[in-house]
Amino acid sequence: MTINAPRGTQDILPGTSEKWQYVEQKLVDLCRRFNYKEIRTPIFEHTELFQRGVGDSTDIVQKEMYTFEDRGGRSITLRPEGTASVVRAYVQNKIYGLPNQPSKYFYMGPMFRYERPQQGRMRQFVQFGIEALGSDDPAIDAEVLSLALNSYRELGLSSLKLVLNSLGDAESREAHRAALVRHFDPHREELCSDCQVRLDQNPLRVLDCKKDKDHPAMKTAPSILEYLNDYSKDYFEKVKSYLDAMGIEYVIDPNLVRGLDYYNHTAFEIMSEAEGFGAITTLSGGGRYTGLVQEVGGPETSGIGFAMSIERLLMALEAEGVELPVDEDLDCYVVALGDEAQVEAVRLADAMRLAGLQVDKDYLGKKMKAQFKSADRLNAKYVLVLGEQELENGVINVKEMATGEQKEIELGSVIEYMKEQMAGGK
Image (cartoon, rainbow, N blue to C red; front, side, top):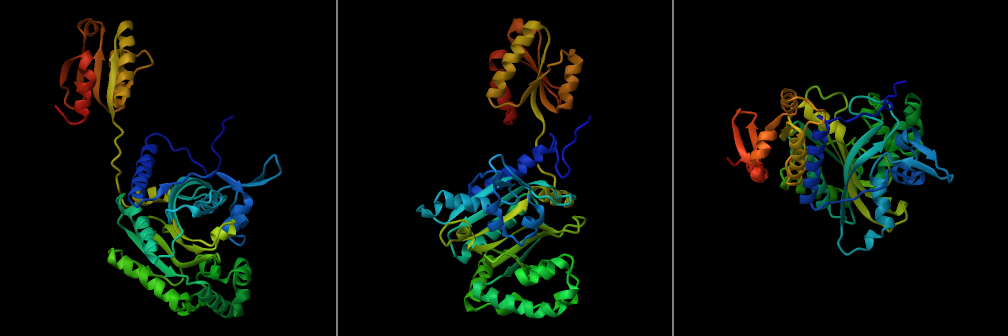
C-alpha cells in the first residue's frame, strides 16, 4: 500500500528547498539589521492559550485548530499562529522585567490550520513573523511596517501595496462598535449566519466577512476613522508622518479591521498587485495590540507585530518572475580509479568538505565515464581525477568543466588551490 502525505501538507524537495533556505536567510539578516532577535516556541501549546490569545469568536478557534487530548487528559493544540506563543513566552519568562525594552523578536516555523487546501494555503504552512513588546511609541509601528514591506522588497518584489488603517483606542472602538450595531441591525436577517452572531459578539468582524462583502449595507457602514478621539487621531497622524519620512507609500482603507478587542490603533496589510497572483492578494497582515499580555497573565503591555506565509511569498516571487540567486552547483566532484585511489578519494573529499568546499563523489562503483556524467548532472564546477598513476606521483588531475582546461596539481596543495578557484583566483 502506498502512503501519501496528509492532505494539505507538502514535501519540499531538493531543488526547491534551496529557495526556502535563501528566503529564510534573507529574512533573518533583515531582522538582524532591525535588531530583532529570534525566539523559538513549542509547536503545540495548551488550547486555552489560543482561545484567549486568538479569540473564541474567530474562525481559527471555532473551526480550524488541530486540538487533541494528551495522555494526561490535557487539551493541546498545534499552534495555528505565532503571536500567542511569543506573548506566552514573554510572560512566563518575565521578559517584561528586563532592562532593555522594548523586547523585539522574530520567529519562523510551521503552523497548523484545518481549512480547505488551495494554492498558497496549506494545513501545515510556514509562518514568519515579528513582535515588538513594551512600547507605545508610534515610531515603532512605522519600524514594523518598514520591516514588513522590506521583507518583500529585498527579495525582489515590486508590485506591492501597503494598506493602512487605525482602529483607535478602546473609547474610539466602543463608539464605533455601537454605530456598527445601529447600522447593521435592520439588515440582520439578510446577513449570513456567522455575521448574525458577530453582530452581537464582535460587530467589527462583520466588515471582514467574505460572504457578505457585496451587501449594500457594507458600502455605507460607518468608518472607524469617523469615531477616532483626539488621542487616536494624533497617534495615527504620527505613524503616517514617520512613513512619509521614510518614503513609504500607503493607502488608507477604513474597512481594514482586526476583530479582537485587544487590537488597537495601527492595522495593516501588504498585498500583491502582480498580474496572475490570484484572487486572494494579501501577503501579510499585522497590527498593534494592548491587553493580549494581560490575557495570558502578564502586566499591561502593548505590542505590535505582523506575520507572513513563506508559501505565499514564494508564490508572489513566481508571479513577478523573480529568479532567486540560488547556487545549486557543486564545487568539486572527485573521480577515483582503483582501490588505493578510492581510499585517498574518501580522505580527500572529507578534508575538502571540512575546508569549506562543497564536494561529492561516486558511491555506486561506476566506471570513469559514468562518474563524469554524474558530475555533469550535479553541475560540478571542477572534476578531480585520481588514479593509481596520479597517486604514485602525488598529484591529482583537476578539470574545469566550463572550459575543459585540465591541470595536474600536487595532492598536498589541491585543497588550497581549489579554495583559490572558488574565491575567483586563477
